Amino acid sequence: MIVAQNGAGAWLGDVFESIGVPAEMAQSAGEAIVGAAIFVLAFLLLYVIGKRFILPLTDRTMDSRGLDRHAKSPIGKVVWIVYLFVGVTIAFGVAGYGNFLTSLATIAAAATLAIGFAMQDVLKNFVAGVFIFTEKPFKIGDWIEWDDNSGVVEDISLRVSRVRTFDNELLTVPNSQLTDNVVKNPVNGNKLRLKFVFGIGYDDDIDVATDIILEEARAHPGIMDNPEPSVRLTELGDSSVGLQSRVWIADPSRADFVKTRAEYVKAVKERFDAEGIDIPYPHRTLTGGIEVAEGPVAER
Image (cartoon, rainbow, N blue to C red; front, side, top):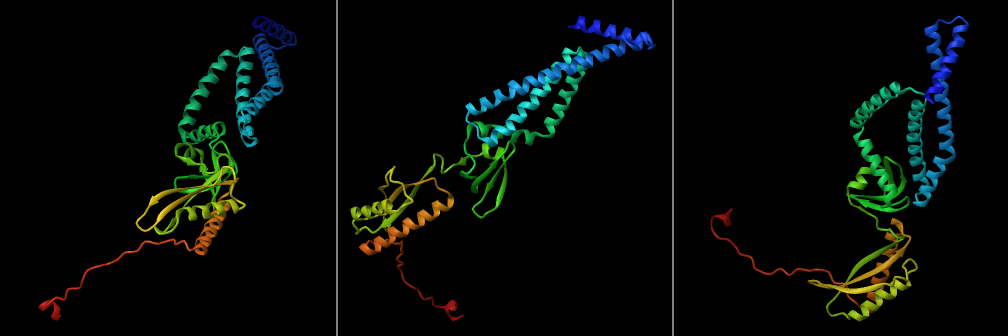
């Protein structure tokens, strides 16, 4: 390849020299034109290969991993940019610009180091975004909780995620905050378990109260039949017996969760009132007496 390139450059230099161009300039111009032509042809060939094979292969790989549409677009762009950079490098090498390629690599390495120091947080969030796309701790539409925040995920990009709070505030959260901290995904698996402790008096019938709690759970349209609702005696408090109800809600949002819990607890409370089951509250009995002081203090 190099021999053919040198031959073509020498021939073109002879052509330039024959039309009056000085010999040294003619040879240099011939080699430069031939090298540029080879660079362009090599890059165009690699570009076509990338469009025909690399990008479709990348799409199939992401499809096989089950990545969402919002994840495929930025990852595809990153892969394409990296491929073009590699293509330019290969094209320079094929064209015989070894010295230029070495200088370009040195400059690129220095620039990468400087940019890396300046963009540590950006790169950290970028890597965290890749982990979110691949590990899928949550997805768009999920209700998540982290630190003291909670909301519904509206968008996930490679640098930030956008979460709509239940007060309708839009939070732009760096991805590193969602990978470095514990993120709770209450609705992972498209269902949510709801637990609530009903306190009844020590003189009330536990079996009757349990039946009421289960009946109201089965009667509520927002509570799933499978898994079945359950009730367990979980605590013996100072003034009440605690019966913990466990029910499941299908495809819940935050609003569904709050609404279903409120309706369910209200229905149980009304049944308890109708059946004469008491929901006691803590009370304190104060004992002792009052002492009356005598002397100078009492006379003031």
